[in-house]
Every structure is written in structure tokens, then in C-alpha cells.
Image (cartoon, rainbow, N blue to C red; front, side):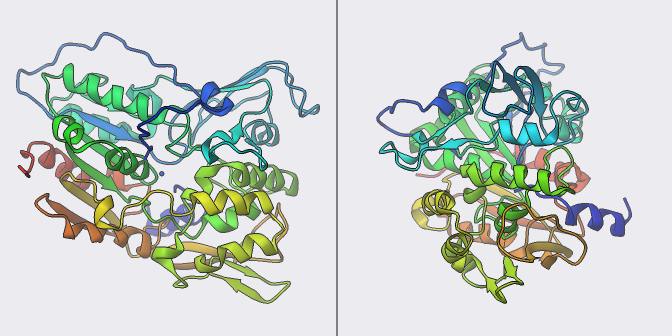
Length: 439
């Protein structure tokens, strides 16, 4: 794809993407109960080769896991269908002809109980009559965007749904919700056992590495030592990215990662992101970013906000629920301190050299703004995530014993990294390396 076309596409896109293991079980919220994976366990085909291979479990990017939304007798939105189904995923090739984009946004907007005494993860629930499930959980069919990666692994002797599996998740939720940890651990343990007790290599793209990192840091060292071979984060969004803050006002449509073109759609989409805890987990963490970039410029007040100003931004926008959620989930996935090192071999990849949107110039701080050319504030990055985000993982160079590398891919954009030939060739090489033997 020509560079100019690629940059234009990435400037209108957003792909931001761990799960806490709690030692004592807690009652699931309604959202956790409803958003359960449809786990399918087809009999895997026989391996074409007797050569042992390191199994791979992929953690997809933001909204690159296919979700099926089932609506039964909903009454919250009278202008939307009472019942039916639709799918939610980037590049959905079967968009609903029944549920408009506005209705899809409204039905996927989580309810938040601001006065609840439950832990934060228990304060979210689905709209009445709405059920959200992962399609083809664990199988490569659940994340078709990564077809080039699957094909490259197949060329090295891998077999889909046997030693290539996919740890999908509901991208609205944070990794302490929706049964993510239990489900993902089981997937990894199954892949280990069904492939000759071989430790599993985790691969994540964009927001996916956040969920993988949360899994690693909330699992016991003995579990990691038994089940994990290593970790390849591709453009991991570990400290978040600036662009999530203006999305609270503009919205973003999942099917094509384009911005809404009508105020009605901008309102429905922005409110959906305001309700989703993952929005705040994926937003630039001031502990890493400080005031290094402007994320929102309010033309009406002549005021600029950096990640360090996010509390004031939400207060000035009169978004009290968002302030509560942000207070808990901004910087939710820890990675920068020694206590949050993943404790496995890491082979990170990033892109660079492309103008990357990190913020937006808005007319004011109202919800539901239609944005146009000249809206975005940019800096260097991979076209989607800025350099601050992509370079932050270098703190893992201080890991004792375990390997760490970060490979730059200049000019390769965020969405092309997981299909880039050099990136995939390195992945195959790293899969064949023995693990570091650490005390």
C-alpha cells in the first residue's frame, strides 16, 4: 500500500489492547455473567510433522475478536429493534441490516452503578435483554485479521486450532472482568497438554499485550515456569495512548475504525466509550506520559489538556461517572516497576516514522462531536500508537536473567506489523529458541 494511503488510513483508525488473578473468588457482576465465551473444542487435526513445536496463543487487538450480540425483548431503546442479533468486530464482512450503528452502540453501552459498594469490576452490567459472547473462542476463526500470521505459522508446520490458538476477549471490558483469567489460563493449559506438554508462547498485538501482561503478572511464578515459553508483544499498548481521551467526545466506529459522520452517531459512540472501563485502561497513563503531549484542545475555553490533566478534563466536561471509572482504570495494567516485570523471555516489536494522532482539537467539551480534517494533533509513531507508548516497554531491559529485545520496524504501520514478513520470520525464529533457565 502506498505510504500516503497507509498514513491516511491509520490517521482515521484506533487500535489501542491482561486479567487479574484474584486469590479469593468474588461474585461475578451481571456483565461478567452475561459475557461468557462460547468455548468450542473441536478435535484438532493431526500434525503434519513429528517435529515438536512451541504452541502459540494469540491475544488480538482492540475489537479484533469477533463478538455476537443477542438482543431479547429489550425496551431501553424503543427506536431500536426489540430482538435480534448482530456481530461486532473490525472489518465485519456481515454488518447488520437490522440494527443501525447507533442502535448497536446503544445496546453495547454498559450500565454503570456509580453508587454501588461492589468492587469496581462488579459495577458494570449489560443493558437489559442484551447478551454478548465471543464467537469461536480459542480458534483462529475468532480473529480473522491475523490470517497472514496463521499462514506463516502453517508454513513452519503449525496447525490451526491445535498449536495456534486465540485468547479472545470482549474489548469493552478490562482483564479483571468477564471471566478472562479463568478462561485464558484453561486455554493455555489445554494447548500445553495437547501439544506434548510444551510451554506456550504468547503473542499479542496492540491492546492484546495488555491482557497478556496482566495474566503473566497475576499468575504464580511456578505457573509461568511450567506453561509459558515467552512473550512477543507487537506494538503493545502498555502505558496507553493519548487518542483515547478525545474518543470520549467523538466516538469511533468499530467496523472500519472511522469517526462518526453524524452527530447522532457521534453521541451514541462516545457514550459507549465513556461507559467502557477498557477506554480508560487504554488511555495514556500520566505516570508514563506526564505532560509530554496534548490530548485535547478545547477551543471554546482556549485550554489544552495533557494526560496529567485528565481528571480536570473529565471534570470540566461534566462527566462524573467517567471520573470515577478513570480514577480506577487509568494505568490499570502495571508494567514499569520491577514488581511488574513479566518474568518470561520477551521479544517486542514496534513501528516508527509515521505521523500518529495523539490528541484532537475540539470546539468544546460536549459529547458527540463530528471531527474533520485538521482536527488531530500528531507526533511520531506507527500511525496509531505514539513513540512514547511503543518505547515504554524498554524498561524490561532491566529484567534479571530473562531475555529482552525490542525491534524497530521503520515505516511499518500499526496494522501491518502483525503481517510484516520480517516480524513473522523473527517470531518463527524465537519460537524455536529454548527458554532462559532462570532461578
